[in-house]
Image (cartoon, rainbow, N blue to C red):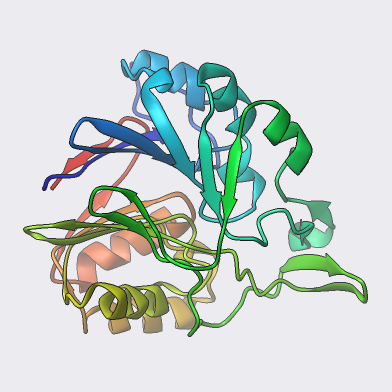
Length: 273
């Protein structure tokens, strides 16, 4: 079965298409004439970009949220106004109060809308830790148990105060194809290498036709970024579509170091496997 991916929200756009770039991510996932979204971006670009690209959001039957940060969930309100009875699949920690302390300040970076507001706008929330099938042959990873090093600048508010967020809500999507697994990551907060191993265990397959999305390499210290790129050489990955928090520098390093096609993605980028 083929899977088709289109970037509706991404940090970068090409000139002359009338599209909006934003720090965020949203992928349209098509399988057998059925559509879901993986993330919704910040909320600035989803609807106008879909319109410019000829995508009818009313045909989307569900959305999977990779984690509870604003740049992946902010487009939910506009999406729900375009659809009816939309199923929203995510981890139970989606609505935990999340903060960032980068750039010398503290700011809220969690889901911009309360749970009851989303339900009032028609969202059917399915919050679970376990993997599930969301389209034929397309699955969520569920909670990734073996996790990489966390980002100490990303925090969560608990009864004891602010703590480093373990981001247990970080999940990914993967699709089975005859060419191999197509893995879609939102920000890979669980660790890109750890997610790849988790998907190998879930699927029983070792070949990845493509790994696409935000890989968080742009926020890693240079030495750790080099380690991750070196570890990627141990996997059978045919192509990468680097986007969002991967960073252009990391994407170019991957082109230089890896035995795979490496695409630098943008709004409107399309991949079919």
